[in-house]
Image (cartoon, rainbow, N blue to C red; front, side, top):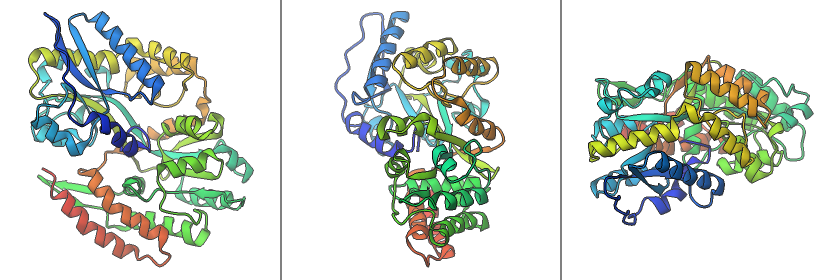
Length: 449
């Protein structure tokens, strides 16, 4: 998963236009290097498309020897290898944080170690994020451009109505359960806590729960991956969900939900809490008529860990040295340019977009002076209540960030059934659900190369 809770749906929709046979790109003018790049928003995202195209024009004006040929969309893992084999893969392409290890092992990305060694961003970005794009020998094959971590999104208005402190989010799972009961007791169809359980989103969230309880999902021994979730910590997470669903009645009767269901309920003021990254908040406001002041995001309860995701860009292994150099110039200018942070913020502000949310419009991937400057600028131009997200930022400094498991989508599909079993069957056997899932996940992990 990436970007928002609706990542699967968005990527699938984008790939309808981006992942088929692309139109022939125009040749570069004499003396110019032409590179194809992914990441152009679809026309349905009017503001984002406008800003992206504007930046392409500005980049080309500042770099007259480089032509940018943008392609809509991001990445579809199902078609990636076929595009590469067929010579259709873009020169600069988007990846989730779950992709680089496999891509590097399959030699599907260019080694950029030498070309990137003098880039100042290598000293300014968080080192663990850079390491995601390295092989075991330390060679570099891409650059991170954004990251997120899952937290607890909650409705401050419902908290106040239920007699809870709207400025103090639950910090433990017992507090989550207690708050959910009090919110559900408001009646009129109000749900205290809701959870996704289909279209791979249930599995994704169960991984998040597992990390939050201090468990892993998969462990690596040498070259082999095996399932690592059939344990007391994950059973504790599932028992909590089962108790909230069937004993407390705080999760509502309707189940088999997905991201848009949770967002619709929250936007309508009928849901107290769900797991999400802060990028969900603009979706609630823009698509479901919510208000920024009504929502807070806290760090994942429990104090152990959270799911860390994100994105970056890699370069086609068939790219010439000239294309690699041009591609790195584009990635740094467009996504990793400290000098453009204020410009990006002002443009979002001009388009009446939210300023002051974590990671929007500039990612929280920096360290040192750049991070301090970014924080200062976001505070200066904030048009949403930053205090509503401070506990998320503060709490994440104390949590371990775990990446998604390998073959994540296959793992999520298996774990969907576990989440569904607990939420739709009062008599579900948690031990049996986990044992059945363990065997299937091991089969999925056996495919990791």
